[in-house]
Image 1 (cartoon, rainbow, N blue to C red):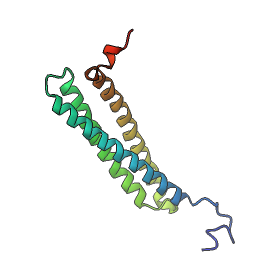
Image 2 (image 1 turned 90 degrees about the vertical axis):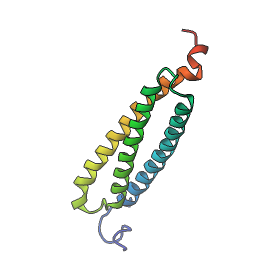
Image 3 (image 1 turned 180 degrees about the vertical axis):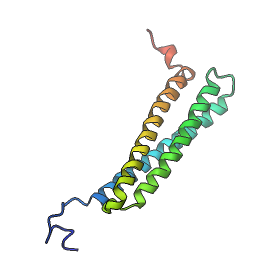
Length: 130
C-alpha cells in the first residue's frame, strides 16, 4: 500500500488505472447523453413523417449513429473493467481504446451529417442569406 503512494519504490503519483477509469466513465456518460439526444431526434423525424425531404437519409444516419454508440458503449465498458496497471492488459486495452476512438470519430462525423440534413426542416436555411 505504501509503495503505491510513493513510499519505497519509484512509482508515479498518478494512478493511471484510476485516471483511465474516470476518463472512460466520462466518455460513457457523454455517449449516453448523445444516445438519448439521437433517440429524441429520431422520434421527431418519425413524427414529422415521410413527407420530409431527407426522411430516409436522416433515419438511416441516426440508426447508424445509434448502432455505433452501442458499439462504443460496449467497448468503453470492456475498457473500464480491465486493469491498466497489469502489463498483460496494456496492449489489448490500447487496441480497444483505438477502436473506441474510431467509433466515436465516426459517430461525430455521422452526427454532423444528421445536423446538416436536419437544418432544412427547422427553417434555418430559410433565415440565412447567402
